[in-house]
Length: 207
Image: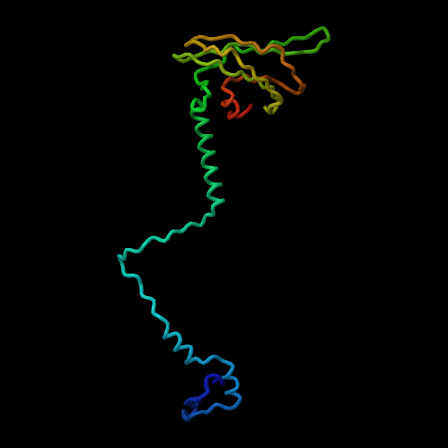
């Protein structure tokens, strides 16, 4: 058996072959090694002296312990994000809450492109057509946006036109013409016209 199993006071041991028993006293080497090890009896006494932890009885009414893993900065960040997300959602579904009239019910009709060339053979374009009110109420004249796109549908250039502030009567239409457009990109293949409030146009995906 290992020397440390003898301890400082010795112990009764037995031969594994003949079963003879005797009291084995520690040798000086055993005592020196034992002095370097903690007293197991003292450790056991210390453990026994510790207060016992009693389980909480079932059905006990304990006070709630607040647990808040977020710092003040994290709370402010999450709060700001939530406010911004709510504001954007309201802008999208109810722009009238922000003083931006909705253009729902207004449509473009008879849209055409007029191609012109001057004496220097410089080509220019004009977009014309009508804005029709399909609703049963008067509607504000929206902003007209004309976008020049390339063969892949990417936006190259756009123009915004604000009409007369007068309203469009129910089931009526008004004509529009952009005038000469200053086109700066030769790879443009077509114009895309759309209408809406400035807020709707800003939130809407561009062609």
